[in-house]
Length: 201
Length: 201
Image (cartoon, rainbow over the protein chains, first blue to last red):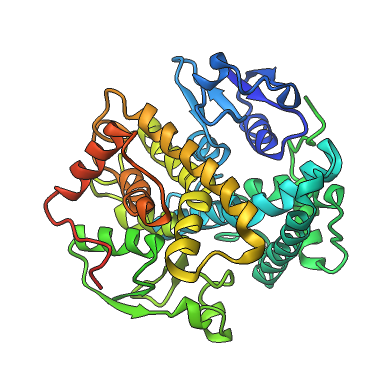
């Protein structure tokens, strides 16, 4: 059985949870309370030296970390990861973009605003991240012109990776009203058969 | 012919340059002067909406961005990207880790210190990034215990992605003396046949 070390409010954890359910792979979910430091214990650091969730324990005991790498692992050989070389690379392109240009801004702002409060010494950084987050949303809106999904006109792990923190961006104070194509894409994802929300443990 | 939009001092550009040469793929290199805003022109943003190098123009005219996605594209079907499912995922794991936990710290500190000067309002952030950069180097040192390369005991695109900014970390003031395994791995990479340095246009 797969075991997912997870944190319910985390978009990165949700990515893996959502794909496991879409693929109907049974798994045991272990909630790791980040706010109480449970991801920084020696025991957890042996699973992921970076001290972050999600971590997926495979049936053979191997621990895999980095949400987007786990998505690719699980999606291998399924319709969620194209076989074709260029489409595969474009899926990765948007997943690397998500981790570098989207998550550190959109997700971090939400984390501070919704979960832990804005640290006093981070107020200037928050505004900078908010600006970069708005830019990331604009890049997505532009890319979706004439497209239903991010790559190859089908629903892939690139969409799952991007959906996770985009759909909860308003919890960080981001207004999605100026992005009609983005909102239509969010609905397209959540209307898919087998979709489960981030709030479902 | 492939065309690489590049910037000589960039580790992200170097990753692609190095792999293209290891694979003996001929390419035309176009230097984009980031410091003069050449990656923010409308013409360049049509190639990569994020306004960053590297961008690889494929012979069919497609533009691919995100250095690590380009590495995977080029390495497909070569010894630099394992076929085996778990090893592939572990290569991606370290590449996503590089873009999230290593590059934003080790590379950004070097960029400020070596290339553009430390912005006055970024001094506190610089120290924070330096701490996170040291942590990233320590994670690498620990992982290399008993290993020659990062994944599957062979030289892969994970090593190329991690080599790029690690070997120039001292230019950002990072001291590599405390990391003997890391230094041995850097030598192992640079001793490989066909290796070319970051300074080679």
